[in-house]
Length: 374
Image (cartoon, rainbow, N blue to C red; front, side, top):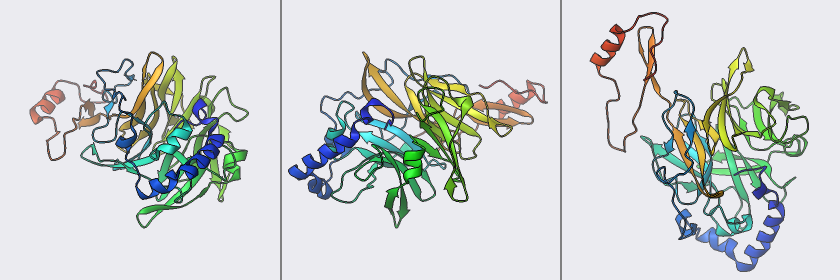
């Protein structure tokens, strides 16, 4: 769900139009009683893209990760899966879904399936996703860009009562359901003009993108910090910003890495900045070519959205993952190996053979040197 892009500029008026249309046709009550599935609303002529048919696959620029692949399981369809957010333990993946990227927002609302979904994993295989309801029955909303810390979800929404077209909301997970959704307030939504965001694990820093005054051009990344329960005036994260668009930030659980999306050679690319002496360092390019909105678990596995384009037109979008290579240690030596992902029920021993480890150990000088990654 791309706030700040063209498809969101007219959503306030669209929601008013959609409200009248749905109330007239009775679709609101119909969907409340018999909601459609994602598959029901994907066009029959929709093209399911694969890595083999992808004209512009994501390009990896780091040897710390495996080559990116679509997530295994039941998440990706011929529709558009977008805006991933993985829990730190890697057990649940939240994302935005709409069945047809060519549909207008009012048609997306009428379809009854566009919104936030969640899937659970077992051995790397993702379950059939479930829709998350964040609105009262009979009321309309278009929700996305979820960020979860503890039992609180922060998300963006188009609905009646907003301060602006798209506002930030919070919801509480209680008794097995998301409840008590409420607007995050005028300060964040109006005064600070926050766009898509990430709340740090200690819930004291909120990173976001915005076109607010004082930036370097286009979308910039900003941070507001909570002091005595109040969000302070945002600061520009200068080292990460350029005259290009930077946004869709993500901060790792340990607070040591800031990930974000930047326009790179005409398409979206994923960058990482590491803390150096308590300050963010110069960003490095990790992925390019229609790769964006990074989210990482505490094992360093990198989830992101990949958009498929053909002849300048977006076809669909899928959630991809680049698995972090697992380091192996032998004395003072560290090297990397690949970790295969097996289907449910297969228990494989991922350890390298002992004789191979001994060969590596005896073939190099033990000390401060590091063996090349393999």
